Image (cartoon, rainbow, N blue to C red; front, side):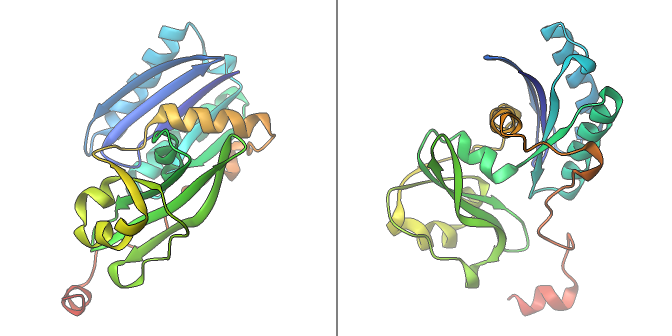
Length: 226
């Protein structure tokens, strides 16, 4: 299987090319520079693997949640490549990709969504893939979902940023991974499993997972949160 993945939901601009069991990776921390950085990174990956876009079986992207601009860039690039090559697209939730990186069977994932909120999900590994214990959502401090059971691993910038998030789930969390971000290598591995199950989409049907309708609060909304 040959598959190219893109993940730009955070400040990390990450691309990966999976060729059977071999993984080629290009990534860089590049806040607000994804649009300029991504295309050259993809070209270098293809050159390193000795492949052209038409040689690939599918294109995958981290669909979010995360940065609105980053999600649009990843989706647009994957769609453009897929349309040009006549191949399908495999969207992968960015929170699931971060769980994949934790090397654990039960993972709660949270990203800093700004405005005092977090993007959060929890996943259990079932039969080699992930099942959601908490579906991806946008949550304020006052409305965090319950987490079933114990011995969870916590990861993501939400846990790095918010003391209230760590305290809420501390009784159920056995270990926390610090300073990790969703990466294209994990997107590629999840996408390969989905592609093998026939879960790819026509390029035109792929879409980001935003979870939030706007990126800033009004003055009145900021004051109400105090």
